[in-house]
Amino acid sequence: MAQLAGLPDGYDADREIQRRGSPERIVTWNDAVRLQPQPSAVVGNGGLDICDAESKMKATIHRIRIWALDPPTRLLFLPGASGNTEIWRPVAERLRHGAERIHQGWPGFGGERLDSRVQGFDDLLQLVLERLDRPTAVIAQSMGGVLALQAALAAPHRITHLVLAVTSGGLPMVEHGAEDWREAFAAAHLQLPDWFAASNVDLSDQLPALTIPTLLLWGDADPISPVEVGKRLASRLPGAHLVILSGGTHDLAMERAQEIAPLIDRHLST
Image (cartoon, rainbow, N blue to C red; front, side):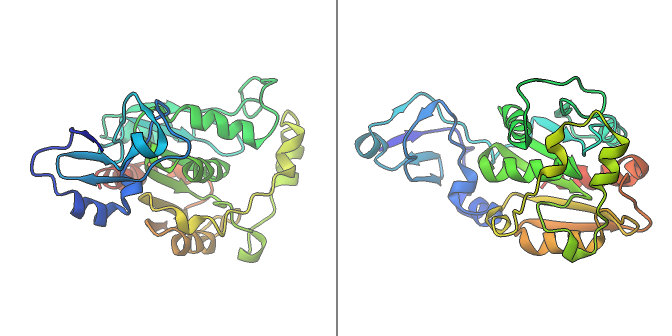
């Protein structure tokens, strides 16, 4: 059994596991841990035990990082379908958190140049996953929130926190009374790639598996993503907390940055 030190002396791992979720939520296997499939692992006082990893898995272990015990060192901001990377800047400028800020754009959306390698939403998701090479909090608006949740489902141990604003969250929107905006939006933005309007992601059944601490930010004056969507996401995501801002619209992040920034700072400190 391999033993890796690295947790502080006197660290109560059992209590941390109860607070954050299962041991698997605590442990991050880097790609430098070459295991197929991954072995079982348990966090305990003084380090990480890899249960019979070498004998059971014949694994070559180069290094292991424990990310979820650490605060985020990167804040990854994702825009919506407009691709407007300015949407989160008023919030980012007001945040006290000291992590690096990255404002991700979408090739072919907004002012971003087309990229022949991006041919669908799976390629946009890959752009997000490539940014998760350190403890990262993902802060996303609208369409970006769907990609944030897909990234969290694909690589839950790479994300410390989620902040989702006025997103569908991969829920079927019609049943929540949402306005169908995509056709008019595409007509007004002719540069959008053809595959944009064809996407139909339903994450409803997968969301309860996510235990990442999640802050949901909604406005009660948004016909594109009504409050009922936020309430539904809050009921499906075990680690979610919903905040509703009176009079908030789909441009919540830009319009209410002064109110939102302290909420995010508080969330990132938990």
